[in-house]
Image 1 (cartoon, helix red, strand yellow):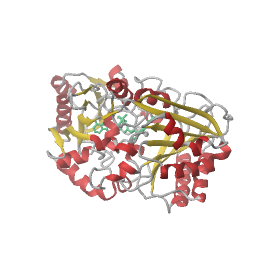
Image 2 (cartoon, helix red, strand yellow; image 1 turned 90 degrees about the vertical axis):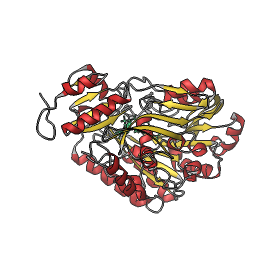
Image 3 (cartoon, helix red, strand yellow; image 1 turned 45 degrees about the vertical axis):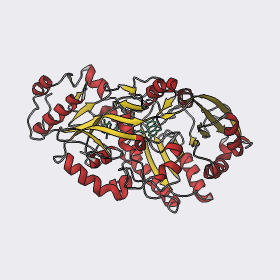
Length: 482
Ligand SMILES: Cc1cc2nc3c(=O)[nH]c(=O)nc-3n(C[C@H](O)[C@H](O)[C@H](O)COP(=O)(O)OP(=O)(O)OC[C@H]3O[C@@H](n4cnc5c(N)ncnc54)[C@H](O)[C@@H]3O)c2cc1C
């Protein structure tokens, strides 16, 4: 069935195809299916008009110019890990950058990366050279999307977000111009490219400063569910006192067949099926001995039922913590549709707020409507807060923690279930209100969020920058959705 442009005519793809070095994937083709893969199963039924899979920056520029003339809107995808499958939208042209995945390191230790380069492959390539990038910790996430929102990982407390290490970005603006932007050249475009959600242009290359790393101490600690409250309290206390070299996440997560990422069906050893469990994992940039000293309050807790702690390469630590089944898929088949939301937390959660945190996971235990979920805390302090709010489009430079709320639901989710999840989040946020900032993380975007939540006082500047570089709103972004 021919698809219509916003002007009501069918786009003439032959004109575009004549200009590109790549083919255009039409509905039903292998390229179309490969290019629209996303993590969230629920979004997999959405059908873009067609999928362009560029092999270079010029392909992206030509596509945007052509789309502008045809009156089509364009969405960008790199690794497909958007939690709500945002890049895949009906009635848009999808530019899938996953084939642009080159990555190399120059003599100054600066990484030259394309947006489809995935986190695990970067760690694998750079770790033997004694270098690493401060990326997130999930291996299949791609740099295009990670840098569009920020980039939290196990080096964030020491080195800041991934965007904080970016020196330069090549951007194709909404109008189809190719611009190499940095802090000194087209600084507004650069500013919007690091944390601005792809609002002003599509990034096709990044220059990112790497850091030297030989060995790190990676660890994963499991605890009995009955001690969840106590472990959350101990986690916060430990983090408050810990040096920047120690970075650790706390997760309380449901067990059962529909859990999110873990490969086993029933949580860590010692876990009871049908009961949630508590897990703390992270990395220490230092020796195992020093890590054990710092982690003593958790290691000595009688609820501890699983310990893995070892010195290893940066790459080994990454794949130990989150084993990724396949880098080629947007998501393994056992991943269920899910909804993810977030809150930045400014101070330690009080005992009542810890109860609210724990009760959230109890509320999304396996039932006909909810299929499980997770509440996660990760640090957002020290180096992340060492920058000014206006330094990058990402504005959350005043928090202690980032909380992530994950809710797994059936594929055929009804409005009623979504409304109940809205209410659950609403009640949770009311109880946490004295601790949360009102800020939310763009890379964990949820349907209840607003641009104000993601960009705070930077929202107006971002809108002005988008108006300069994408005046006709060709790009589909969180600021200018469909
Ligand atoms: C399993 C899992 C683990 C995760 N772990 C972490 C983590 O440890 N730390 C963390 O910070 N986040 C994490 N995230 C969130 C992740 O950073 C975001 O979902 C990110 O946007 C994914 O990037 P992507 O390219 O894979 O996604 P995509 O779905 O391809 O892209 C997401 C959005 O990014 C924008 N975008 C993508 N490519 C470009 C481009 N080239 N130019 C401009 N804009 C672009 C678009 O707006 C697009 O809608 C995780 C997500 C998942 C699913």
